[in-house]
View 1 (cartoon, rainbow, N blue to C red):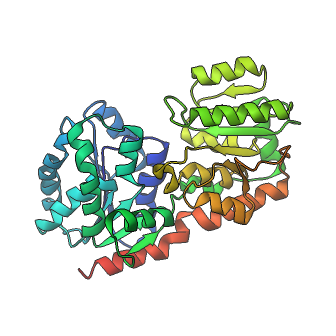
View 2: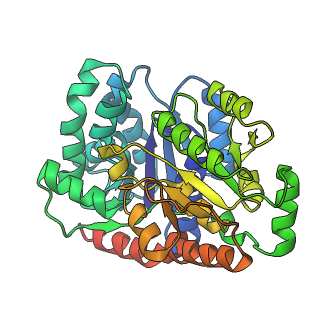
View 3: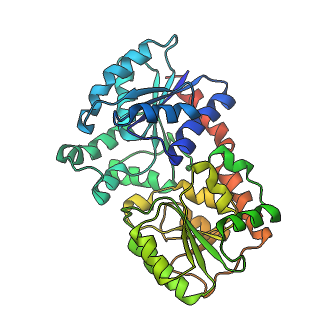
Length: 382
């Protein structure tokens, strides 16, 4: 039995693709029983539990104790849940640092054989660079907690090679017991059809003139740290190319409204459910992935990169964004934001099918099934 443990993550499109879809995939393909145990905030608990169970009906969804600084106290409820299982889990996979430390506490109690740290990023750097928490105790403790998650677990997954290098430099981690597996796409993206009729239908749904080149940003921009970078880039592109148009798959914000006022009829915002996103991306040409040059972003693996490619888009990406800026340059998957061509060309059907083929080869969950099976086998001997 394998348990995937998340702590503090609320249901979202990313949670669906990286947690519930992953658990369903591993359960179906590995031959092992795989259970999701999710600790979520008591705020909106019942609604959020229902959302998680819509995609993972067998998930055990538990309320976190109030205040994040009390995270360790949640171990007692985790212990109860583990003791109630008919069979002790051979492996607990902890999503990020605090979930992993709770799993290590369970291992000390003999409630699991092994613990895996599913490293989604450089958490101590992210908390420092983006003021994720306001509690001095948490800010002062996170680096040691992350070090413990990296050094004391039996195996690690890193979403990028850059993240492994961060572990080496910050925590003196010795390579050898890790797997580099990027954020994989929701399995629904593997079924996206790219053909002329689907593309035409998507462009009609968006409502832009079909002759223009369409850029898209998928995700929220509210309170976003890299907004100035995106604004400068878009103004440059919109001024240089009069037929360029931009779609935000996001809720309307002052930033979007201001851009729309400055470039009438060339900017649209449309907030859609995660399952509807591919039907809009299909009608676009380039996905925007613009981030600041921080440690957080240098080790990152944003899933929207893979989602853009899976829907046939090329990507306009910042330099030094995880492993992905290198992919864009080496595989001709788009352009770095500091070396754009004078004019962005509309993508052909051939371009789009090549982007999709790369995404399905590199970012589908089935691509890493062998890695997951090896991880389970190796950790089961502990």
